[in-house]
Length: 124
Image (tube, rainbow, N blue to C red; front, side, top):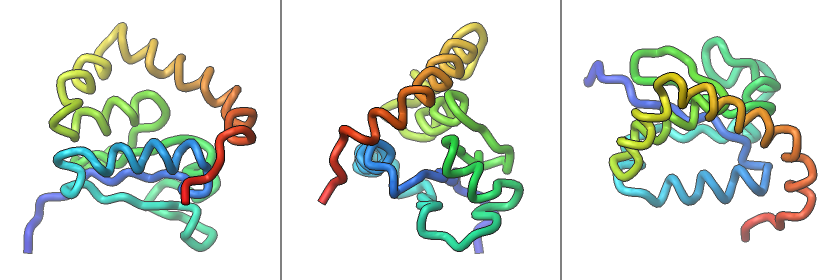
């Protein structure tokens, strides 16, 4: 059995925006090496060690291969760094001052997310 831990992506599959975006990332080369966890399908409680379901639904999370947890824009940078086609972008955006901008951008997105969810249809 391997002791190498995969990157785990926690996402809200009930959110039409999140579902579409994750479907895009899952179609990318290297995505099969990541674990994808739709937290909307998990019973109440923790969906991953240290991440309550409510928190995982409210904010994007990635559990890195080393076990550390990234949230928000930092989580996107971690996801991108784990995908070969986005690796360079992820590594650049995980460093200061870029990480501050990515986190700020994600926080702004969260403000408009409810409005966008209302206008984006669910995938079939």
